[in-house]
Length: 375
Image 1 (tube, rainbow, N blue to C red):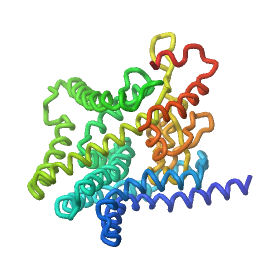
Image 2: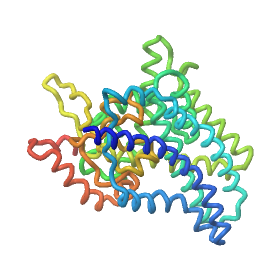
Image 3: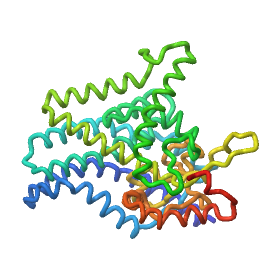
Image 4: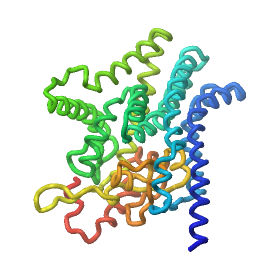
């Protein structure tokens, strides 16, 4: 038992230091530029961050394997939950993302790229923004107080998806794994059927939720206390600043990288909840959300880069838990690989269904009619 405690503490200490790997993600853009200069293959190397995230990471994830170590609830969780170091790592993403966006827009409009180089640079920035802005914003908007949720809103404004701040917390977490949730993919539903529905309803649901909040205070939807107005005004201000500085190409870059970033988010939503559902109770209400209503992945490397986002089962069961204390549960539905691999599978629906449908069917085996409500 003493040996087991020692090994767990060592693993947690290594993981604590290794969260600094997230700083590699924003460096992928300058690395791509540098490699383009060194090799003379500027257009090809503009795609380097995409190759790195969806080529190298899946391979390393497979080779490194899983990390199923959990902190001890009695002696470690509370201390880790309150440690400022973990909070600082997420907050520093705000100035990094803002600086990277401005610099990347300058490169897009001034560098000697061909058509495919510009396309690669835009897509690469979107992929990086999906990780550095939206993923970290997801952690921040769940926190209490003002600083962290506001930092999350700032990050989401830089990818034109501020509605996520409202809809994710007040909508998705309430309705997850039910037909009412636009971010929960159904069994048999392809990614390409899921995405338009998610884009539309996550935007509209955010406005509805904020309007309902204001109505409870006797205020109209279009009021200065509507936080979505402020966040989208900030997005418009960023777009205007980039247009003023770099012309219409600056606006195109901002819009394009935003679209890639929030589409990456919705693909991951598709992966996280595919085919899972909460059962209706006799009173017509849905059962409480537990760690059995989201797909889990404990592949170490991707979890380090994503601040444990893949321990999504525990996150939905306990949204107040910070990323550093999220737990692995063996009885949660388990993905066969990390998110980088699963995103690639989702892009090819026949391959996705061949891998995932048997897992959903096996998970609900013995439960009559379990899959029918999901079609």
